[in-house]
Length: 324
Figure (cartoon, rainbow, N blue to C red):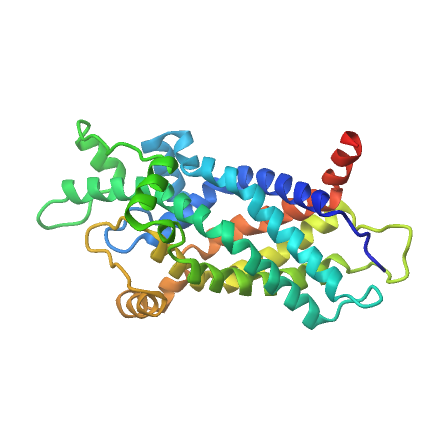
């Protein structure tokens, strides 16, 4: 069954709308993922639910959305590039309306490569904002810890020191200006290699898997329905996203660590991808490479489920039709 060819503007609108809806729904879980992955020294959070509960208690409900503004600003071009590039590559590599598995993998590789130009600075800024609360909480725990004995809980520490003031919040704009002044444009693209290492394999797994799941139960000669039903696209996106997310979690841990500029007391700084992998393995063991895997799956599954659902609804085509 040949897929309907969409215009590039329609692909970009579909991808952008899908990204905005998806990120709004799952951002708090993404924040928990970042904080859990960066946790090396003092154990501030015991898991995703504990992280979210303490974030709400100490930073308020909107504390779960720290860094969301920059993500929502840049997720439109990021998701638009990713989804549109995959469609373009698939169309270019298709012959007689059919695309072999190697073509699906190559199209995913191309999509993952194209999105890095936006993904790297977006995640660079987002991670600094997301992790600020963890660093503040860790300093509070460390300051209130007795000379010997168990580390107090975050809540108990904050209650015991109500006068402790948290450091002023840094905005994405301020971080961007500081990076450009001190490190130039390269500062915003710190960790680009690790981002590429994560996103290319992710896309190579995700897009072929999604395409095949999305085609389940649909006859090749069926011409009455050019698109899969919304629910099928949503479920296919969720399943493919979960598998791909868990598969590349070790690479995501490395990327997150490399892009985190401010470290807590006793936390490692890294010289590069190999150094980061070696230090994590030596100090924290193999299980550290799966930190945040559950959060990541819970983020990516609905994110890409919503993205594919909205994308296949054809919002872009309808909007262009109204404007045209």
